[in-house]
Structure formats: C-alpha cells, structure tokens
Image (spheres, helix red, strand yellow):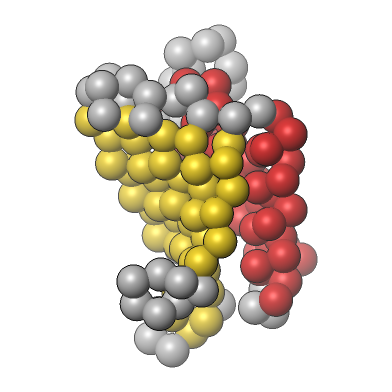
Amino acid sequence: MGNDGSFRESISLHSDRDVSRARVLVAQWASQQGFSVVERTRAMTAVSEISRNCVIHGGGGTMYVSTLYNNGSPGFRIQIVDQGPGIENLELSMGRGYSTRGGLGLGLDGARKLCRAFRVESNAGAGTTVTLDYWR
C-alpha cells in the first residue's frame, strides 16, 4: 500500500528480462483500469525506455506502480528509481536526439510525450527518479 492507502506493486530492474517484466506489469495495470490498447501501448513503450535507461545508465533499480486519481479519473503512477551516478545535464538529456551511448536519443523525450505527466529528479551521485502518470 502507498502512503495514501493506494495499492502499490514493485519490481526490481537489473536486466533485459526485468525490463520485459516491467512492461507486462504496466500492461496489466492499464488493462485492469480500462485503458485502451493504444493507451496501454503508450505506457508500455515509455516504461520500456525508462527502465532500460535505469538498467544501462543507473546500474539497475526499482519500478513502483501505484493507483492514482486525477480529478476523479482513475489511473496509475509509475516511478522508476535508481541509485546510479545521476544525470549530469538533465536539460540536455531531455532534448530530442541526445544520447550518451550512440542510440537514437528518444528515451526521456519520447517517454515524456507518452504520458499525462512526467517528472525527472536527478542528483549527481545520488541517483535518478522518473515519474510517469497515466489517467483516463
């Protein structure tokens, strides 16, 4: 249970297999709350990107999923937390096309566009927390 009495689940993120498990968990939450196939796919895609970043750049971490209501609309909140080195330049990292490993650079910017609300908290040496909110 979350601090507000909401239901909460968590999953460890340390491998590609865990990233797949995270996608499945988010699909289940979205389905249980009546989200459309398109909405579920958006959430699964965003979680895939952020959880993969957690594994690759943050050395692994934990994903939490909890219930969320926004003005009476049901939804869920995803928080992906790592204890890695943090994001050195968050503003630069949020830009389209930015990559530290030669990828397409769609991770943070792409995930931000796939949810209702998006927040990144990162401190050098103290890890990163990415929060994604979805509601109908």
